[in-house]
Length: 130
Image (cartoon, rainbow, N blue to C red; front, side, top):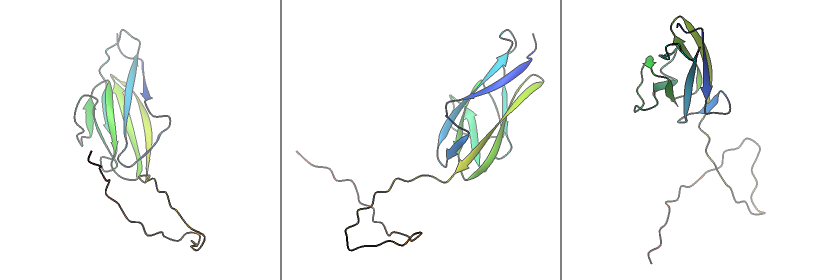
């Protein structure tokens, strides 16, 4: 029988990701006896890349698979469409700036003005030999 509906599920708790994040989207086609072939597309391959979940990420406009990996490339909003037969649905993903954890130790003699930059030094991890 022909597909009458398609829904998109995500392994992410929200429709928001950070640059370099990868999320998995899966399509569910109704009814269960319908062809489960799903064609995925995106409106912006500069913001995200899509690939079938078992492929290495490719920067393609269109992928045919039931499950895809979406990789966030840069900040912005992209729409992903899942089409099964003549029915489709969309999933909008907003990409934000990559989050970096930072811990600062400040003694009583230092002050930081609101909004000021803090110079940081990267340290290489040290390994101990036994």
